[in-house]
View (cartoon, rainbow, N blue to C red):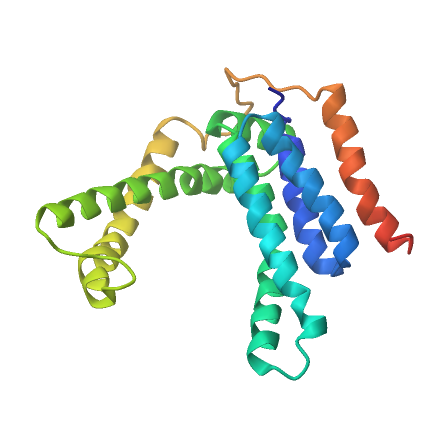
Length: 225
C-alpha cells in the first residue's frame, strides 16, 4: 500500500477547490477525479474508492440528461442539481482521502513544515478531534433512544430535533472547550520550535503525483482540454 505525504494531500485539497474556481469542463474534471480516486485504491481504501466512483458516475450520467431533457422542467432541475453536487464531489473525495489516511500527528507535522501559524494549527487540532467526538456522542444518544423505543431519523423529524439535535448542540460547546484545553495543556500553543515523534518526508512518488495531478488543470487553462 502507498500513502501520499500529508502535504500532497493538502495540495490535492487546494487543487480540488481550484476546480470550482476555474469552472473546468467535464473532460478535465473526469481526468482529475480519476487521479483523486487513484490514491484511495493505492492506500487500501477500496470500498470508499468504489463508493465515490459509483456516486460520481451516477451524477455524471444524470448531468448528461440536460442535453436531452428538452423543456421538461423536472428533468432539468434534477440534472442541474446533479451537476452542482458533482462539482463539489472532487473536494469531498480529496478531503475524505486526506482525513481518512492522515493521523493528527502527521497533519500537525506537515502544517509546521509548511510554516503555518500556530493559531491555525491549534484550530485544526480542535476541529479534527471535534467531529469524531460528536459522532461518538450521536451513537450513544441513538443507542439510548433505541433502548427506550424512541425512533429517530428523517421519518421522525420532531423527535430527532428534540432528542438528538438539541442535545448535540448543547454538548458541542462543552466538547470544543474541553478539546481546546486539552490541546493547550499538551503545549501545542507554546512558542519556539516544536518536536514531533512522527517524521514525514516527501518521496519521489509524491513529487511525481503532484506534477501529474496538476497537468490536466494546466492543459485546461492553456486551452488544450
